Image 1 (tube, rainbow over the protein chains, first blue to last red):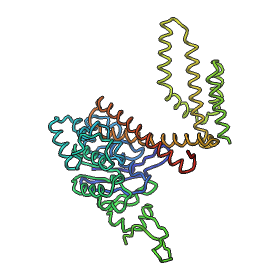
Image 2: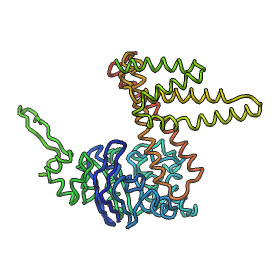
Image 3: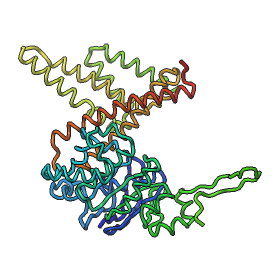
Image 4: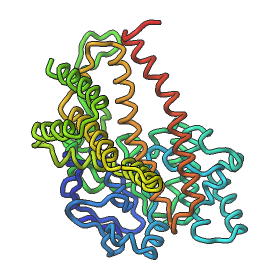
Amino acid sequence: MIELNNVCFRYNEKEVLKDISLNVKEGEKVVILGINGSGKSTLLKIINGLIFPQKGKYLYKGEEITKKKLKESSFNKKFRKEVVLLFQNPDSMLFNPTVYDEIAFGLRQLGEDEKNIDEKVKHWADKLGIYHLLDKEPFNLSGGEKQKVCLASLLIIEPEVLLLDEPTSNLDPGSTGWLIDFLYELDKTIITTTHNLSLSLELGNRGIVLSEEGKIIYDGNLEEFLKNKKKLIEANLIHTHKHRHKNIEHSHYHIHPDYD
Amino acid sequence: MKDKIFLVFYIFSVLILTNVHNIHFFLIFLSILILFSVKDFLFILKKTVVSLLFFNAVVSITYVFISVLRNEDWIDFITLFNLRVFSLTYLTFFFLKNVNLFKAFSFSKTAMFLLTLSYSQINNYIKVFNDFKLAYRSRLISKEKKENRYNFIKSVSGYFLRKSVSSSYEKTQALKSRGFFND
């Protein structure tokens, strides 16, 4: 469904992604792990056709995604309906006057009639627990509520691929738990980025790990990766530090989290 | 020290460029400036032209139009105006390319404070603004409607206004906590 072949991307002088090749099948739940600055968000933006690799190819359902291809309005419409991205900062996605309009935005563009839109908006608002916010202005909401509004406005158009950029980074523990349960039940292809190891297993079963230099250093079973201390250190996802116990006067090197 | 000398040169040049009204002077000044910046000439030229094109074109065309209607001479004024704005802008980009602003303004705590505040705000905002544009593009399924664009512009402006106020307050507090000022 999603295929990247030797993709490279650079911002000005800095090479962010190096020689990325991966293949995501329909229905897979993939977690992209990597520290801040490893190119996770850039990778999602490429998959969403917002930026384009300087080298290599990106194919969606066998079609190469290029700037030129997305200029074709029929293809652009199909692609934008099928592949959606939840940005890390929900504020960047919200621009409509009310939560209702925000959720209805996608369907209105697709030309659905207002009666259908009304039904679907209420259905998704109810499902995400934001029904009571429908008349509110999006910018006045809390981080968790904004995240839910963004999710509702993406899910209402029934996309096939959901790209989630650090979806839990702005959430409190309660909302994080809710989101994990919600995503678990969604029957879609989901690619999620995170640097949170303890949550990663809840978000998918396949892990793609990016090194600090933007290279794939692991692609496979996520649980296996989390047991591989050497790989975890290579990705800079865990660290060692001196550790002191209450009254015991010794210190030793400690690794978080300990999966062994 | 080099940065401070450059800053003095820049301020002095700006004063001269805004007070001299001689086309030959501007041509000589620009030639010397280009000679000094020959390594980055294309980069600075591109930035200068992009920044000025709209503003200079509107002012020049309007001025020429009114002058022709009044049957007045316009060539000298338009040449001088364009040369002046071009020189000032080119000089500014040349200055920014070659000077570490933080070192240049290190003589004054207030100047450093303002610079730090502006610099971090600008960098943050560029990043956030790019995300706004990408998010908007990502959610556009069909052809963009005027109403959507107005809503987008309104929302982005509102976001930055609110963000400016709260982030300036935060940064002021951070600088205060680090001993930049105490009032």
